[in-house]
Image 1 (cartoon, rainbow, N blue to C red):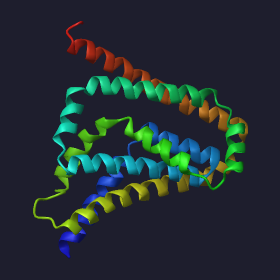
Image 2 (spheres, rainbow, N blue to C red; image 1 turned 120 degrees about the vertical axis):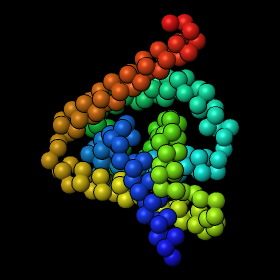
Image 3 (spheres, helix red, strand yellow; image 1 turned 135 degrees about the vertical axis):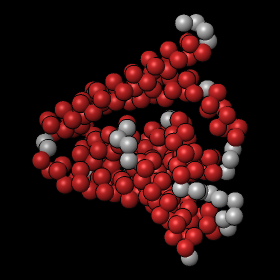
Image 4 (cartoon, helix red, strand yellow; image 1 turned 30 degrees about the vertical axis):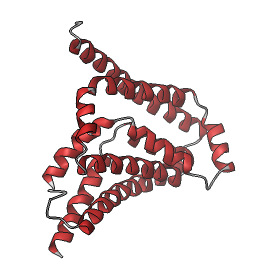
Length: 218
């Protein structure tokens, strides 16, 4: 029983720590919660949690081929991921939230798009694996002596931790969204889009510089 409790605490902590940094996916969840309500933001977080689980499984299963590929191509992957985020940021800056709100009224219970975009948004950053590896080491998961059900409980707890984080964040953001009108939502869209754009441009520039240095061009 003590082993299971230890796994629960450690793996829930892993899920929270993976989700907590306020990167592009966190900003996206906040933006969607403000524009479309708590469910939209939460289901975006569900997609992000699924992507985190995917990378955790790769690390936990010891797929060295994948980790070696990422380590060997870290700069080009950073360039590709940054380019994807730049495209989305530009879309966010120029997209009118009035039409977005109308779409959500027409498709109120359809959150598949939120989950898929949340998954792909997080999947575009495979460098998260280099955060997962030390977290697994810190919380001693998984250990060779663990039973199969220990592993299942551990991975389920990682997802639980991530979902707990997104539930809390979207709850508090949803509480203040009534204070925003359409004009302020559009302004928030532009501010958040600009932040993501700047972060992505920085990632793109540093990735290109590192890649050129790797090729001994500069």
